Each structure stands twice: as structure tokens, then as C-alpha cells.
Length: 175
Image 1 (spheres, rainbow, N blue to C red):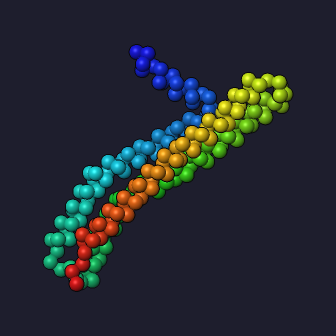
Image 2: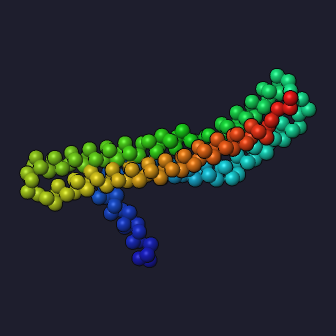
Image 3: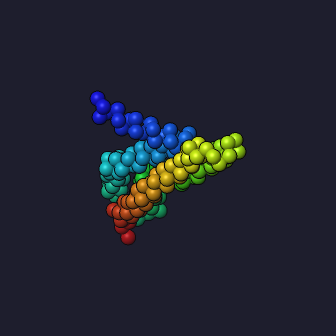
């Protein structure tokens, strides 16, 4: 049973070292990763179904040249694009929020250091170290979260662009 409790205790100790802001960063990173994983799963399942449906609708049309056909094609492409891009702006916002929360952790940790210095002077190194820890750990966690998110958001965005371009070609107009 120790093998299960040790990681939980390590995470709890790490969150205590970083202060309250680290918990907020952890929630932000968790939400970001849940949405990233959702998008990756959706690309394999739901988006393919939407693409197949759009192709079936387009291929079942006898008229592909008229103004109305262009509008139907645009609607199918727009629906596909919107489905692919769902949650991407939220993920991008969470990625951008991670380093800002890390900076907030830095500021709150340094405020704690200055409070200790104001009360006990520079003689209480242990209390000052606690504040420095609360200043640096959230900064590191925010940067790590942002870097992992930036990489995957870039991959997701490029994948969406390729998929939408592929759908545009598949729904080509007959001239």
C-alpha cells in the first residue's frame, strides 16, 4: 500500500512547498491537459464522422456548380472547421495563463520573504527559504505547464489546418 501513498504524499508535499498559487497552477494544467486529450480523441473519432457525413452530403448532390452548391460546400466546410477548432482557443488561453500564474506565485512568495525580513530581519534564514521556495516553485511549474501546452497546441493547430485543407480538396467543386 506504500507504493500508492508515496506518490500522493510527494505531490501533496510539492503543493505545500509552492503555496496556494501552485494549486491553482495545477488545476489550470490539469484542465489544459484534459482538453488536449479530448481534442486528440475527437480527431480520431468525432471529426472523422463529421468529415464522412460532409463527404456523403456533397457526393449525393447532383448539382455542384451553382451558387447554391457553393453555399452548401461552404456550410459543410465551416461545420467541419468549427468542430475541429472547438476548445482550441480555451487551450491556448490556459497555456498563456500558466506562466502568468507562475509569476503571481513569484510575487506572493517574495511578499512572504519580505514579511519575514520585516518582522525578524535577515537572521531567520529558514523562514526566508520557505518564501523563496514559494516564489520559485510556482514559476517553474507555470513554465513547465506552458511549454508542454505550447508544443501540443502547435501540433493540434497544424493538424487542424491539414485536416481542413484536406476536406476542402475532398469537397472540390466541379467546374
